[in-house]
Length: 169
Image (cartoon, rainbow, N blue to C red; front, side, top):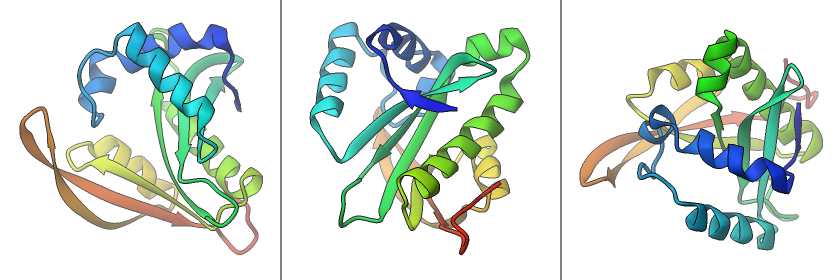
């Protein structure tokens, strides 16, 4: 399930985002300070083209889903996610949460936001997420090179188009 972010979610969101493996799979890899996190959140709240939601698995908040590029004349958006890796591993719920967050994001994109396509970007070396997206029908549409922490890395772009019924698994 996806829900609106509450102010009391912000410390957990920062902790999840700063997990070493989440940072390793992100375009921004440094440890994010509380001040930087607060500036980011203020920017999100002021920008109608961005939406950040909390993912709950089994009634427990354990992830974040982001949508960007939203607008009345823009039926295509970009999304991303990260999870509470430490908490999910401790509870033995990692795989189920990965499938759940993907399913919830797709549902929200097509059935709530009524998008026609959902795009994303994945570090080419992040095989687990590439396979997850593939399993849910995302197609790899291209790629580009980007410098992260002084190293040039390959990034894969993915896209999922709205099925004719607007519903996904």
